[in-house]
Image 1 (cartoon, rainbow, N blue to C red):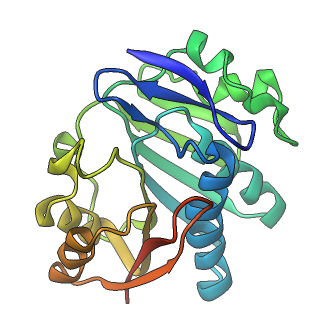
Image 2: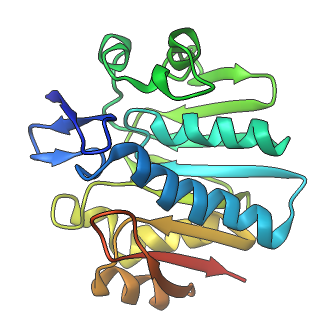
Image 3: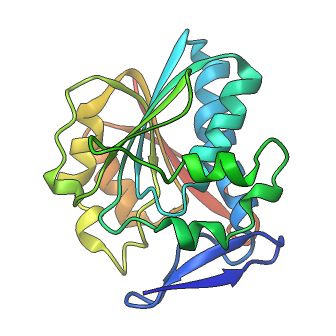
Length: 222
């Protein structure tokens, strides 16, 4: 089901062969994650709202790259993070080992493994100040308490591959889980997604996208 592929920036990603979809941009897995989720999500929230801690929800944990980069940013920013994620088809540890994320400064093979070692309660603890809670199920089966999340990383496969995850109903679920202020980010810039976000109450802006993509979306709950 998963095939390893190298992207243009030298970092690796996976291809879901059933959906014929890559987990990251083939223009660069690392640069896409850093730009879309870390720069425009994590650091944007910190710089604008200056929280004492950060609660993140990721739709589509995938290879764990977004979580690892968030961990590195949290360490350098000296902020505690609670990270909640949903992934219906988790990447196994053997598959995770063949990705080259341990070459990223600050990561090691042992640390990378911690992002894929979950206990019976779906909890991984890469660090005492960075806790991950994983839901191994579909998004519509996950219940997140209202207003308990600060930033949503929406990293589902494309609207063409998983249209059910880009409906107004799915995006309303994100709106409800977000606190005020709250930030939602994705790599997509499709008009249908922007209109669905607006319809459920988000303030939506198009901003410059990562390499190979002119625009992306960031949505605010204020």
